[in-house]
Image: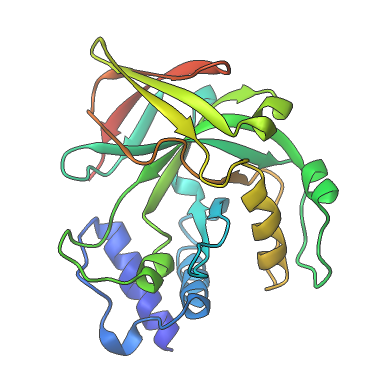
Length: 257
């Protein structure tokens, strides 16, 4: 019941686009496992509006904390369907993270037996440039701890899937220089993947989550970390995002409330 109460608070906060200080102490998660149970409860409560369309992940942090969270279908947009990305403003800015997404072409069922890297690679059909859409749903002066943020899906508010890129290049992309142009001004970043190679977190997450009873579905898109952290951009401006050596795309960020 505590998990359901926490999930309701976090989901209502997400849907209302309000800033939360902290979860009430009596329903606050105390570890990563409790946070994942709350994530699952959010997914179930939100199932009439959206399904899981993707995941975000990193390798476990140095302190042992895990980074994994679902991305919901009603927050995913594709360049193939239009060049607009809709975000809730955060300090009047569109906050994004340039990443690579790995799209499954096969189901990966829950299993107590670990999957090999070859089996996981075989289930990945396409790779794309992608933008994680970021929204900090806790207030600026919040003292929310990592477990609360993990329960709230780690600031994810959506995903914009850009052009397809070569799968071999995507797997080898330990570094990508990123150039972002808005209103004629270009800003460049020396991009580096936080886990060296972008597929490494997928191998960990698939086996961690399938052994917890989670099944992954064909079509789900997995992102594994930003090449240049969070970038704050303006709304209603034609934006060109270039992954040097891989390609570029245009997008325009639109505010939702």
